[in-house]
Length: 169
Length: 351
Image (cartoon, rainbow over all chains, first blue to last red; front, side, top):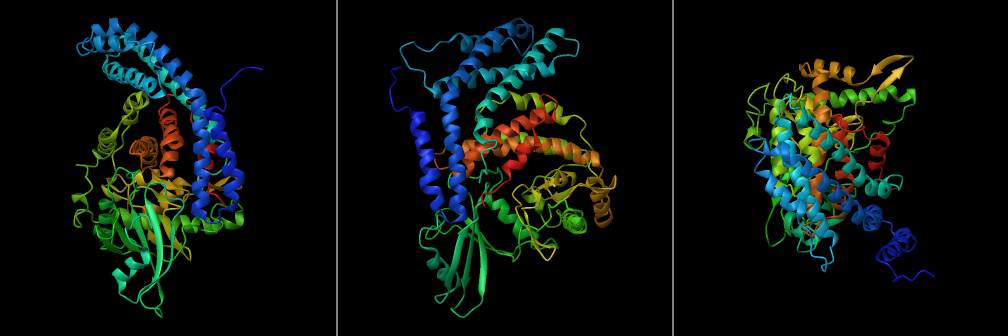
């Protein structure tokens, strides 16, 4: 037997979901109530999936951006409006939370948001770069690949939550 | 009722006199942008039943960026035109009664649904085309409203010229997003430039309805008797309305011949409106529509932060918001287009 602490939060949520499905929804007669209940069920499933996957998804994104953003410094430093961004990006990339403080999902989300903001700032400069700037084109291609990957990461939580699971409302 | 501090039957008596009787009240279940309640009453116990609609923002705020006051303004102004709309009856913000501001309009008898409209059986072709033409005629009325004379531009910012319509439309959405944006969105920064490419010149500067078509208009005997949902109204290229049009231009092909579709609808619209609208303009605004979806998806997500969001906003702020980002990436060639089957599922309602 593998020792675990029970019940897990996800198990509790599944129980709530099942009870709604079998013990409450069949007795609802009003369309508004049934419609709200349908949305609630989707949202419970969303939280379940998110609890299971979000932490690793965010960690993966942090790792990807911490590796990528320093590769932009040389190009940024050569840009009139780019050099000022480098110290701020460096600070975000290099900062580590204290090991003794549990990193809640909110805290990790804040870290991802800060990194994404740097990507946005970088993109504005990449868009303004002249056509012949080969390094800008290379970095831009990397950012575009990151955006597609990030949407897929997000989709890995959202799609299985909703698609094929019935009316949303 | 959540909009009132006191019972609805007391409010009905407050409005319509001491003998007034509440007959029924029900919340519209599908609404995902604002809250809609239907109520029926008799002015006296023997009087015929009258029906009203109460509209308010959700408790935590609206999913749509425009204000409830603007929606009220639209109905009031449209009451001075040939566009069929429900007469607006009252703006209510009396703290004695209202939990939060709402307005009341007449409920127009009819149905948002048209039986068999989505049925591909050829025997319904005639019906489907007739309904589509009816919608074209009503859009023509909207697009020919003299918005300047009626002062619509006192609320809705108007572009400076037909060349300015597309940039104005995009800049307006960008400014709206900046007003409430909480989350950095690289996909938006990346795609917004692509959206600006190929901006067309508008054939004219029109009042535009915003979301329109099936689910937004009230039909009776095949005629649109009321056009609803003006919360995304704007002034600009009428093509924007064709990009926001839900279902009412069916693509019908028989024996290898196209009998109805967007081009045929635009041709008919041109005849009844006098506006020659290039299909390329519609295609341009269809791409912009993906950015509009990001706005309301993210707005709903930000309302969640108030702790007073409606459950519908939780959905809009999650699935719809995510899908909007994927659609934007798809429309600008950054990523693969989203499977249309996903959209179809999102429009289903519980039985």
